[in-house]
Length: 230
Image (cartoon, rainbow, N blue to C red; front, top):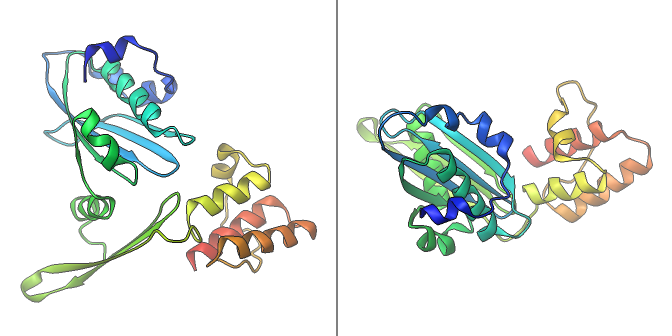
């Protein structure tokens, strides 16, 4: 990443950059660092790690509001500013990464493969994973093979937004809930109501009906989450 990027405007979240710990890692000689980018349908995530031990040095997570290239550039500018004496190897995944990877010198990794690699490296005991993206859902199942080997079966639904983050975002917006308020809810003891989980339109219809009956937002969101999981 060129030094000219660091001098231009960023528009990134400085609080996230400071919390990520990057500013405490500037001392010492120049070094190579690994940057991971996830350019999704609704958000962009970035992480900087130390190659030797994969220690996380810096992270950020932002909604791109349909401005993927601009948000990616801002995050890369923030990373370059946080580690001015370092060089970077960038790996990019997510639905928007294939088009942007060549422009930032990144290696593209298909998102299901990236998810499988991360699970196999960090949680080798896991047998199945379900990941809900902004507008798609992915499922991976590991099956035991001969001599302790494992093979994986993968499935991805990118044809319908039902059961994905887009449904959650849309209903939270309808209920007037911010992302911070949504994240603060606790669902362990919330009363659950019947909500259709396979179709976003039907789920929204059920939520509308329950809201008219006076069901509070925490119970509505808990019921939606339960429906999506089921």
